[in-house]
Image (tube, rainbow, N blue to C red; front, side, top):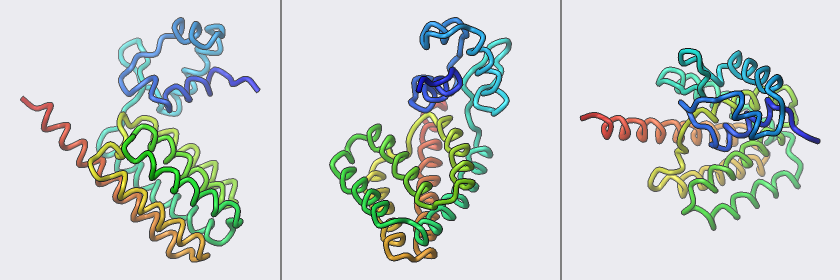
Length: 212
């Protein structure tokens, strides 16, 4: 099934083709995606309403998150993802648990590739969402993870973070496999907390470099 203009632009932002601060031009997007300017215009208006895009004069640019917005995003993410892990511990089928374990096992071979790990990380978390078997929670997490696309870099690029993140993933899956909602939820909260802390350190280091 062919995707609509909204989905194609959103996918491009999520893939990092358009990064925070990049300007989106109707004519260029229409040429890239092979559609007319009308659906592009409607898609841009929709993305602006969802705060994925922001105004810069008369132009639309990919939005960025300030410190407070980042903290708010991670706070909500920790709550919703922890709930997904707890529900997965109750409802995940054995096959779903095996897929989660397989994703971790495969990721150990690419821990030196932050971009590949970032893509796989999205898949891993999405599989936990689905394993919760709660469609309303999955919908909310889908919306939340759209905003994660507004983060210009991955915390997995930090030194030592890939190894730690995969161990945290293993702790989450162990809790789900045991059918222990509290353990799975606690492990996922700890994982999100470490990801947030790492991102704050990266942002602080970047700020120091930018100062004269």
